[in-house]
Every structure is written in structure tokens, then in C-alpha cells.
Length: 334
Image (tube, rainbow, N blue to C red; front, side):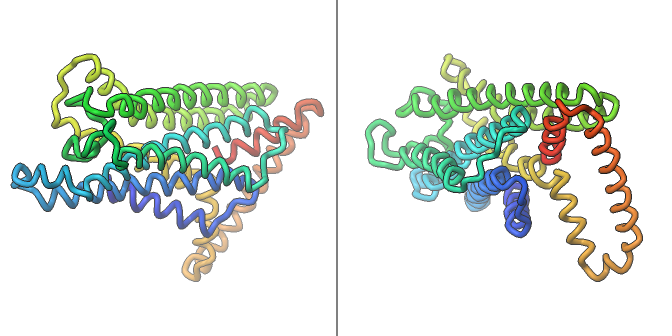
């Protein structure tokens, strides 16, 4: 998981650095920051993996030293910082998509200062939440992140330890609110897409199915990452006995789900990224010599399909043509 999160998000950061979208600047910037947030989770997993290798076979002898070390505290800070910033950024990305789909005629916010302020607010809140337990404060105790061997602030084996309200706020309140908002938003987007293609049902049914499938995968991965954490935390607070061994599974198999899959869902499988990758490959000498004919056929097919699509949009009626044309444009990066 560590290598997938690190390599995948580095590819996204590199790809979006060299390819800067002109039509969806705000959305592209959000996704770059999301990749940076998920990259931090890869660093956290790498630290835990290195500690596991270092103490393998003799962890009991070094448990106290490791849990009370500055490296464990730093790893806990990284995991919390990554989790909260990723959750808030996913919510922000979803809100941006919701506005694009449900209000296609509304002018997009292109003022960079407002976009930067939103991102600064997200990073500032996430950093403050993650750094709070590191400050000298009796509320969190001396080693808040050292409560368990993987340095998580989840605290399920001792749910009412110092700072338990803070832990519940992070893993129950914030995650639940974000999950409900994302679920509602994608359902609303799918309804808006279907309504906008009412007069072109046969033409857009296939595309609607693709979009619906992508939406379902995004929501499913969010649930797979957040629901187990929410359920386990609520169960622990309710008095259920949770084995400390569960920490390792949650840290390695559950928390990194979004960090590993977000690059695939939001960038690597999108039409814009694949189109840009094909263009880059065609610029290489080995590709351009052998694929000129294929490229010509592809462009011809693309232009033909685009003409047919525009023809349908033009014949849809003056009253609804603007909305459908805008919805079609925004569906291209969903």
C-alpha cells in the first residue's frame, strides 16, 4: 500500500504539473492538492513499514521506546494530517463537481485568490487538528499518538483515554458528515445528468452508465475507507472489546484505501489524462513513426463523433441547448 500510494500520487503530481488544464483550472488544482495529501499517507506507511522491519521479532523489547519516540509522534501527525486534509479535499472536489453539473450556466470562479484561500483553509484546519496533540497540553496527555504501535489517534482499545473527544470528532463526526455529503452530491449529480439528457436518452444512455459506474466506484471506495473506521470507533465507545491487533489492519488495509485509489479514480483513468498521455506518446519518435496512420484514424473518428454529438445538441432546441452543451462539457472530466 505504501508503494502504491507514493508512486500513484507522484505520477498524479508530475502529470498535472506538466499538463495544466485550461478549462478546469480550479478542479485541476484541487486534485493536485489531493494527490499531495494522499502522498503524505504513503510517507506514513513507509515509516511504519521501516519500523516493522527494524523491530521484527523483538518488538516487545522496544515497544515503549518506539511508542514514546519522536518518530512515532511524527508518523501519527502525518497520518492524521493526511486523513483530515484528504477528507476535506475530497469534500471540496465533490462540491466543485456538484456546482459544475447542477449549475452549468453559472460562471466558474476563476479568481485564483479565492481558490487559494479555500485550499489554505483546508490545509490550515488539517494541520491544526494534527498538530494539536503534539503541543504540551494535559488534555492529550504526554504521548497521545503513542497510544498504540502504529501511532494512530484512533484509540480503540482504550476508547476513553485522554483526548477521546478529539479522536471521536475526527473519526466519527467529520468522516460521517463528509461521507453523507459526498453520497448525496453524487446522487444529485447523476439525477442532473439524466435530466439534462432527457431529449437525447438513446444517445446518452451509454455515457450515463459510464458516469454512474464511476460515481458508484468513488462512493464505494469512500465507504470502504471511512465506514469501517466509523463503525469500529462507535463500537469501542459503546463498550465493545476491540483487540489491539486491529490497529495494524486498519492502518495498513483500511486507512490507505483512498490514498491508493484516488490517483486512479480522479486522474489516471479520466478521459483528459488518457488523451494527454496518447498525445505525449505520439510525440515520441518510436511512436510517431509507427502510429501516424492510427493517429489519423483516431482523430477522424473523434472529430466524426464530436460532429454527431454537436449535431444532437444543436437539434435539441434553443431553450435547453445551452444547459445540455455545458453539461456535456462538464461530464468530460467526471
